[in-house]
Length: 111
Image 1: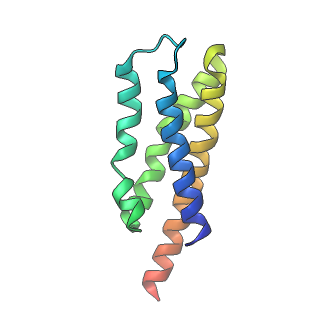
Image 2: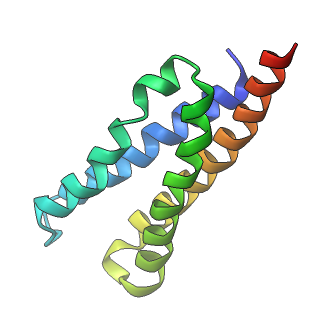
Image 3: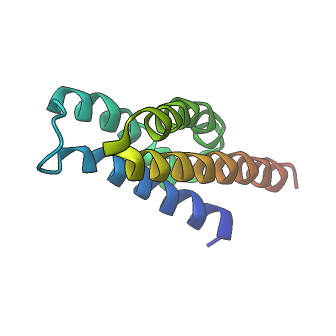
């Protein structure tokens, strides 16, 4: 398995885990927001597992939303700084891995 695919899958899993971590006791967050943030991450899972080039191209754009959420929570909410940091790092890694793996898949398809 290619290292970029492994990095992408691990960062996708960690991003999903950080979104689901909002259900921890002590955090006063509605479950509606947890569903709203975690369900869209399930849509590209089949394409990621099947090496679909199109999925790797558009998931990079999807991660930009999570990057913005992570940065805003990192700066504005002291209770969610770990969540914000984890979301920012995971979304950045997923963005970079998906973009470069999409380039790799396109290069493999041309040959």
